[in-house]
Amino acid sequence: MRRLIGATAGVFCLAAPAWAETPAAIVEDVQGKVDGVEFMDYVAPGKVIKLGPKGTLVLGYLKSCWRETITGGVVLVGAEQSSVQLGDVQRVKVPCDANAAQLSEREANQSAATTFRTVRSDTKGAPAKLPTIYGVSPLVQAKSGSTLVIERTDGKEPTITVPLKSDSLVAGKFYDFAKAGKTLTPGGTYLATLGARRYTFQVDAQATSSAAPIVGRLLRLE
Image (cartoon, rainbow, N blue to C red):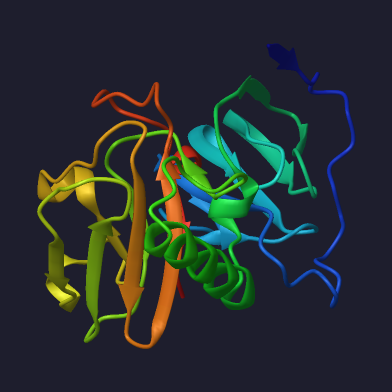
């Protein structure tokens, strides 16, 4: 879907409210002059972003799964999509799961316990409503200095162990399986262990090795 906001529209003069702390979107790309954000930043509702005439910003919304490519103008970040004045926005719905992108520690550990019970009882199939990613190479938010372990719970597959070092993290806080040349299996269910925390998720059965939007393969483990 393409939307053009005319140059006669007013410019936003809003500041981010104090309550707007929960991220609404992630910055998937920045090109040219864009003030206020950088690649892989999270942005909250109420954030105002100014773009130069040729500046381009790509936002992936964590809840609504809208992926916006914005050129020029002034952007006001919303809860599920942006408002744009004096610029152009192309908005596309992409496969994503808000439960994977915004997984809380409590939810993660609960789903991990469910998976372990399923595996121990030899029940076939993944538990219902597990957080799902839509690319075979997840982008994992985690801290440097920890060790990430990914193991398959519904079949046999080599365990992936990754010591997280600062030089291996994108923007200092994301480990990108695609950049590292690592992939998981479409339809597989996995347990991610990060320190004392355990998280379970599944890879969509239709996931491919082609480039997938960041919001569709994001796992926020920290």
